Length: 351
Ligand SMILES: [Zn+2]
Ligand SMILES: [Zn+2]
Image (cartoon, rainbow, N blue to C red):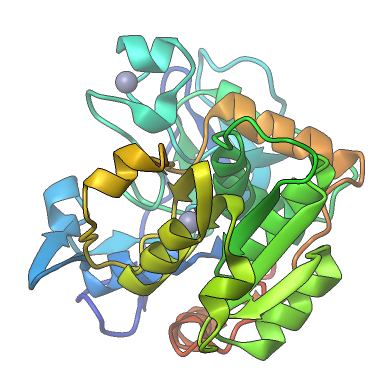
């Protein structure tokens, strides 16, 4: 198999030829055909998350030690089954749920693999990911039939769409006149706008610093756009019932929290980095909620796929590029040159 590996943090990925693993037990060997490029890949590539105040969280503490293969938006074809694998056949196309837990703890048993407390096996985070021609999946239950949806778009459901979907599941009780702000209109934010619309939210305020991304948000169904660099950005947004922060920077957090109406909720799933410094009394006086959301559960991904199959999700612009352009794709994402999502094509790669 071929994989595009981080051999040194922050340096270009290198193509490596290694032996293709054989599936054991309930494992399934998938031949990867598509793999989405996500913003959090940039952090893992760099080797750390910025915690603000000069502090960092190093990904090596979670098992991301080079050589390491990125990629947590995997889509492929079943290539081989372990002796105890059930539920799929060789040749079937499947989306792979990447947020795999230990499978044994109470949290995993309750279907919340993404919040596993005793040993996550997240593909492309704790385990080799899908910037590769092959990936081992521990059990066929993590494979989802996306028949009828474009393969590249299907790949992006595994992280960007399910993350946005799980964040919208944390909205507060709302009345019909309420509006929801979407902070950051990259790949996640754009699909977030589309999900909010599918859920019947009538007023969606899209915020970004990039006019091109705001125009894309409008196409997705945003009813109002705000350039968050504008002097009057806050008054333009004031009174939202919820602000979903797909960036997660000190600036977006300050704007999102300040814009909430009483009883509103700030939901953060972006991992840009930094720290939150906020006066405590107003959190109580305004009865606001500050909630984190991290990727999504297997059930939530199935619900996202069902929405997409019904045509209720408008794909954010998806650009499919050959696998050999992995480094250029990461550089473009880092430089803010990507509107929507880049998906790498591993189909034509000879393994
Ligand atoms: Zn991601
Ligand atoms: Zn677990």
